[in-house]
Every structure is written in structure tokens, then in C-alpha cells.
Length: 268
Image (tube, rainbow, N blue to C red; front, side, top):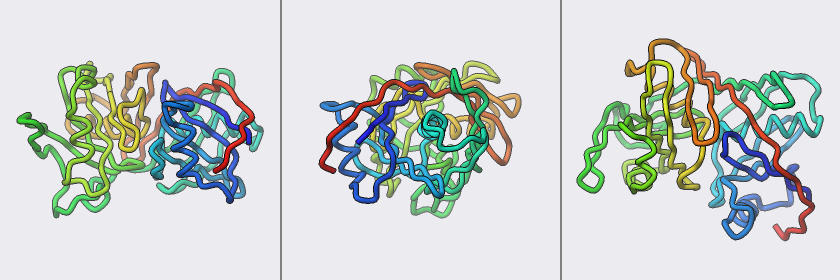
């Protein structure tokens, strides 16, 4: 088995060709574990049609991954699976359209679809959307907004996003009983009307260096709540930046980087 490691702004993944005989949930837990390659997730690349099959490191399957799909596109380019710079990718979140602008260094834009605030899309049993709703976590009142943006996301605006890395608020919001399917939690710091800092506690992963769909969710909520002056924002992550833009349809632009590949004997 050939496995490849890629990262998108530090968010790293094992990629490999799809094989219907493999239990990818088990394989993700094995390969992504801290005792193995300690990556955020595993991506199986299926062709005819082109499909991204994504698993978190805990073995749970996720509908989509923003940084993951850029790594997927880089893999497709490196393996010469397609010649055209534009192509569609099947995911559990629907068809995602990718445009490759540069191969070395790799840079692409991705049509990330449309945000959806409906309660049923974020897995909550209430009749109204979660917009500026307050929860109390360890005696701390937290104002949050939740939406579906490729997957389930919750956005919390804070004065210092990096400071949240030392707190348990992200984990406790992720596992809060309000969210039947858990939620990704994005702590967002406004730098100015065109820039945001985002740090994400990812369900099934924990703290991650970057979350592409989380950056899109942060952009949407920041735009809708008046933090941004226009329809574009630069999102600062720990190991790079993403450019997020759009109105009804959201576009993500950013890099992906190949790290290594190995031959591996695995009992899946």
C-alpha cells in the first residue's frame, strides 16, 4: 500500500488510493494515531467518478474537509489523475468544484457551497437557528452562532483566539448536549474589517492547526454580523493564510503541500 502525507496550512492528512476491501475507519485510527503518523485525518481517493472519502483521526467519517480537499486536489495533480485544471469532486457534502491556479507551489480555489443556518442541519432540536445564542460553560457565558458549512460549525468571537488553546471551552462546546452530532468550534478574533484570526477545536480531532470549512464558517458569520467591510477576508492560521470570499456561494483559496510517501504493509 502506498500512503502519502500532505498538509494544508498545517492541517495534515494521509492520502491513498481507494480500495473497497479496506475498513477506512479502522485504518484512520491506526495511521493517524499519535503512535503512528499523528495526522488529523485520512483521505481515500476514489476515481470514476472522482470522490474524496474523508475520515477523522478517531475513525469517524466527516462530510467534507476544506484543507483536506486542497490536499486531495494536490494529490490528483501529482498523480496526474486528471489533466484539466478545473474539476468536480464528489463528497458527502455534495459536488465540490476545484480550480488549480499553480502546481509548484500548489495553490487552488474551491467552491465550498452555501452556508445553512437551519437547526436541523447543525443537529439541534430547536425551532430557531442558533444565532448569538448564549450557553454557560464553567460559569463562563459564551455567545455562539452555528451553521452548516460543508460540515457542522459553531463560531465564537473572542478578544484573543490563541488564548483559547489553553482552555477547555472548545472541547466542552463540541460535546455539549445541545449538539446531537457534536460540533466543530471556531474561536474567531477580528483583526480589522478584512482580516480574522481563527483557531478551531475539531470534532473527532481536537485542536487543529487549521480548518478550511471552519474558516469559511467564520467568514460567513463575521460577514453576516458586521465584522467585515466587504465580501472577502484573509484568515490567519498558525501555519499560513486562507482567502475566503463570496456571498451566497463561498470560495476558499489556499495552498497545499506534499510532504512524503511510503510503502506500507497494513492489515486494514
